[in-house]
Image (cartoon, rainbow, N blue to C red; front, side, top):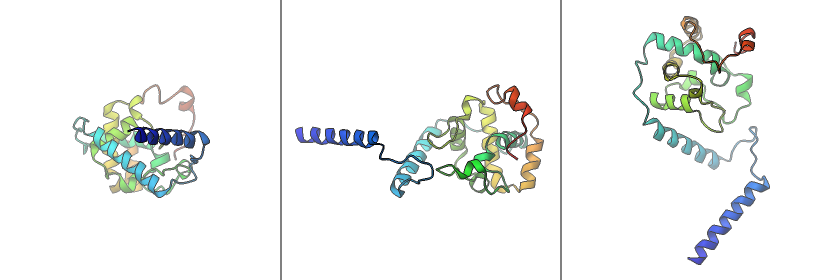
Amino acid sequence: MKAALIAIAVLIVGGLGFVYAGIFDVAADNPHWPITYRLLETMRDRSIAMRARGEAAPPALDDPKLIAMGAEHYDEMCTGCHLAPGMDDSELRAGLYPKPPKLADVGARRSPAERFWIIKHGVKMTAMPAWGTSHDDQAIWAMVALVGKLPQLSPKAYHELVGSGGDHEHSDHDHSEHDAEAPSAQH
């Protein structure tokens, strides 16, 4: 018993020494070791799957109005990282690690409940924001609906959807008077 306690104490002190010495490189341009990446990826995926089980059933995700609303939100908030059909890269995305998925290629990889949970709550240390702090569930389900359709959309069809989304109000947290005067940097 005493040996186990000593071993635990040595591990704790060693771990704290590792943290405080600054040995681990947190630079986004220096990738994780493969084992570290796999462990973090597995932890992320299992966490999302477990928490998404508690989400309510999605609305009719094939509703054209819901998809159009999602296209408007996605175009404004998501294309800098996740791109849109026809986009190869963005200045912002080029410097992110881990690299955000290109949702026009892999949009429906996750279940609707998992996509909803990710959009609503975000993912720590990935630059994925928690949009639930500024958007209601309907807006989030709209983005879920659009992401499920992205791989099937041509650039032209995507831009037509964005234009048909109407003017859905974003919360006061999304726009300031300054933002309304500035041209969109997304296009």
